[in-house]
Length: 271
Length: 213
Image (cartoon, rainbow over all chains, first blue to last red; front, side, top):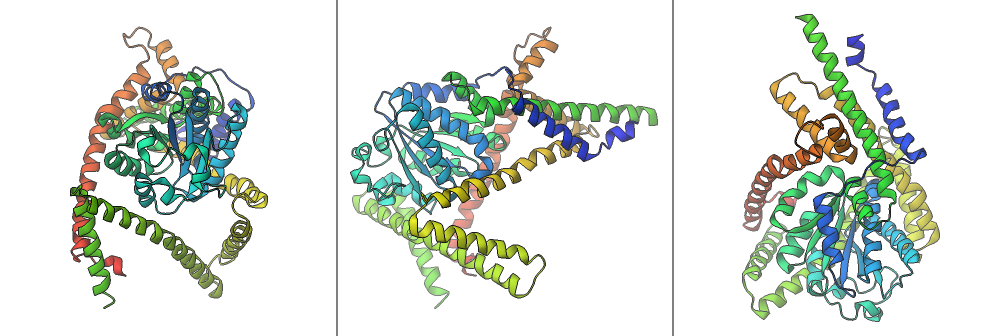
């Protein structure tokens, strides 16, 4: 019996995981939501910006991790548009641009924001580090046109924005190591304030930059997304995500504990 | 000549870019901006090179009937469909967006989602308190997992209400991330940075030439 438990068939575990994902998806749950300290700092930073300020959101994630990062983008953009803060969308990843366009359009429609006046999507340019450095000199030299193909000098909200000096914050929503690039090249060289929203697996990489103050705030996975949604009082996909994540975490903790109890009991019997 | 010219260009631009970092003179800054612009012009060629290599590799697989060569046909189908829709009409083409939203997004998301199943299975098998180090890893993982979700605090506050620590799960997780994790990460960052600097010096001076092929 103990041996069976210790060598539990992986397909049984897969069924448990599937149930832990499906149950909170089908039956809405009201599990508690807390706001991590770093997410609160990001919210406070954006909340303190005066109307008319500009922030840049870098949508540096692909389709594989949009479920975790899109709720963050949605919550921050809602917060900005509510406060009268203008949003510039950009991406260093070619497959993110369609996702960013779809999300920005959706949030703008909900908030009654005007393209070109309240928000704009620059799109994608290849080059990574070169794009970050180039925008520090002059955004229009990297992106002559926006994602729609309209020249930047014809877009009202870009009239007074030349480079990072007119941007109050860069929020990098990342599923890869782009946060380090933004910190190294945009923060250190151009003194642009950086915040990050990252997938759960990247969180531990961010703490050295938080401690030095090179990141003004951080959202980590569904925990950060649901926390930000709570702060702006607009529960959405982040809340649904943290409910699912909570059950899957509990399941894994339970499996690990049961596996270890079985392991110890068997070892005692062998002695 | 095929070796000397790239080496000379690498040395020249490497040294110039280092010098511009330390000189606030307007000529130096103008030079820096110009070189960054050149970089932006050169970058798209890497994409062209990547597509050419992809086509070359998969064409060879089909021609030699290599194992699972049939999958390479899907690579060509994908490139042809998306390029023929996207290049002439731009990424706002409804058909281009439809393929992206209904083919690429679900496939990518599915691949990533499978991780949850394998992580659960691997955690169950790997996290056994067999040795002192394994026990340490196990306890740390359990605390971080508990602190990662708000329900972890609720469980802590219910089961361990007699302890003086309220919200102990997230507090302990935060301590682990802020102290042992931060120290180890910083060590890694410093080590990697020193490695990158020494490798950059080797490349600029032409000692390291593997990038020439």
